[in-house]
Image 1 (tube, rainbow, N blue to C red):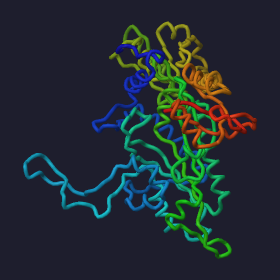
Image 2 (cartoon, one colour; image 1 turned 90 degrees about the vertical axis):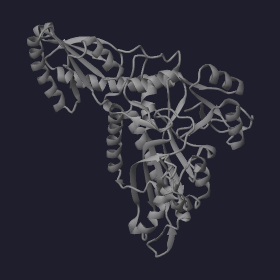
Image 3 (tube, rainbow, N blue to C red; image 1 turned 180 degrees about the vertical axis):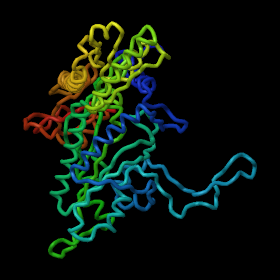
Image 4 (cartoon, rainbow, N blue to C red; image 1 turned 135 degrees about the horizontal axis):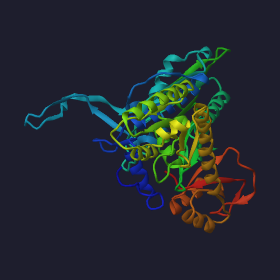
Length: 491
């Protein structure tokens, strides 16, 4: 094994960066600001995709695919949308290269300039709504419930693997409806889907809320979000769902004939989560020894390591393991038997601990004689010796317990790091010494929100959906407030 990881307490940022690389999740690519997602990391993303895709389809959505390139004129049609993304857009201006006449490789052919520049999609509302104009004519065509799995580009100057890269993977849902009420219900439903996925699959407790006007998606009437708390006390936005009103339908002239024969603009939504969820998974649960993965998303849920003195003993162990493996796989549990002789058991233990495998089984010659096996769980690092009889059932129950335990630990952490404050002095003190979610009164104005952000680098993460009515005064302006909002410094 290589030297140990940096600790979270010493340098959280370095701990995260090193863990992503050493656990074989991803690495920086030759293209600045972009990443290579390695097989182990991508297999976690695939499990996320599979679970989310099933949830989308259960709620009536179907997958499609739209172009990577967007004509520049499309982005000009919705003013707030283009303003929100203009600084992050990569632009294609030419369509051909040619050999450099001076013999220095290739150059852009000046004669191959595009009549209209193309934007590499930062998000797909514009190109999708231009398509929907052809798909929607009547109320019979609604609702239109489409999702796509894709890559997008947002030109970032300061990047970090999974959390912020110039290119990233995501899904983006885009739906069209006959009424505002239906579109709002869709936005809220998809927020619930994301929250369910975060809590039941990622073991990540989230706060559901609404973004302020300042933090709202460019071009939306309202943005719903889920916010999670990382172990360093910073917030991470884990998913968003947007009620677009009729903004994009108006911009792209998407109308439908209602049951009375009247032409109306449709109502829209969009919603998405990205590979940023990988960053959330790592930062919310992992420790100084490596990844801690919830069993539902672990590529390998159980690893079995033999401990043997000779080939004969190895064969006896392997025969027993074959039976255990068969039982586990029948239960839908992913299992790996590592009988390679390249490394000693101690090395293997450390390697699978680093990679966050939830359960490790170790079986030796003495275990065979005693009819026992050693079971180690990654989340608590505890070990026990149990009977080989019923081991598959024991492991299945243990995996469920680990999933629940990881969630409860994260929930307890969030509760311990959620603070109510009533003055700006107290706000600053908690922000600098404790971090976490801060519940404080705000007067509802963008001006106050901006001033707090400028002075403290903390933002309003959301107005909680379950916000309790509570008369108070804004911590900054002293003006009246009807409830507390969630502040935090964030990724």
